[in-house]
Length: 102
Image (tube, rainbow, N blue to C red; front, side, top):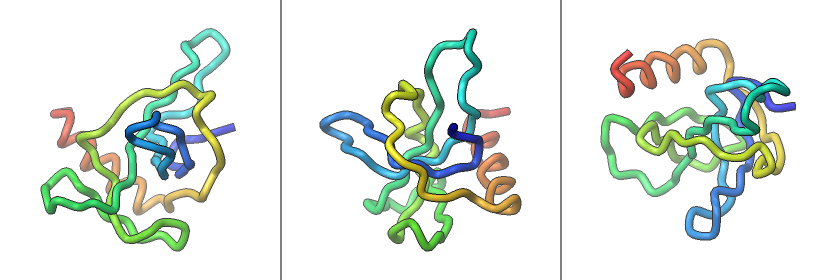
């Protein structure tokens, strides 16, 4: 079962394709919608402030793109690649809070 701070290959649809995504939320409970929030990873960098590069051996060079935060059906989760360590996860939380104005 998927957990917060893990990176999974997720099918984002025909145009976006299957790509690595970071999970900023846990797997939903039985009484919740079968949705999970994701931050897609991209290798097509633009150099803007909302691209968050985190080097991991299971990812190509690139960044998680905070402007692409979205919710997808849990049925789209394909396979787990790995997870962020606590320091990396804290960086994501801080940047995501800035992006969302929290």
